[in-house]
Amino acid sequence: MAKKYLTRGLSRLVRGKPVIIITTLHQSGLVNAGTFGAYTNLSATEIGLAIGRPSHTYQNIKRTGELVINVVTRPLALAAEICAEEIPATESELDKAGLHPEPARMVKVPLIRECPVNIEARFLKEMEIGYHNLVVVRCLAGHIEEDLLSEDGGLDVVKAEAVVNIGYPRPLYAVLANPFLAR
Ligand SMILES: Cc1cc2nc3c(=O)[nH]c(=O)nc-3n(C[C@H](O)[C@H](O)[C@H](O)COP(=O)(O)O)c2cc1C
Image: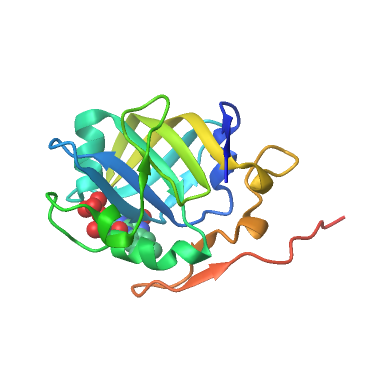
């Protein structure tokens, strides 16, 4: 399905905190894909991500300053687990997971075609917190399948069946359901 291109309110595209696959570029030019769930929306355009320093994702973000955040939906949960495996930087998680890159507009890092939401982003600042670094990124542009865009310009997480992780250390996935107004 064709995606709508957005430049405003981008962090609303990951509300509900769905599991994400972050794509980055290795120095060889190979696309790296890692799975992440510990992050939060900080503002309309900034997202803070807890990323392990040994990960290829962290190293690639520090070297290139660029990343793409791709939202995981129910049919993509297994692909997300494959992207979480520790595989050598010389091999592509995307190939292993049956996912396909497609060009972004503002960064050199590709989007994942199968993910219905993609956010192009750039490194802003970081803070060391134990094993992870809190990596703050600025969202530059977003892509969303039009039927998943809610009236307020954010992701309709229920319709998208975006998955959240509710298990540790073994991931257990759930989708959000039954939204309601308190008044
Ligand atoms: C559902 C799920 C959520 C995860 N969330 C995080 C996270 O928030 N931060 C993190 O550092 N690793 C997280 N991981 C582990 C990374 O995906 C894993 O370390 C992966 O190998 C990183 O890939 P990379 O080395 O290609 O960057 C998560 C794994 C799964 C399956």
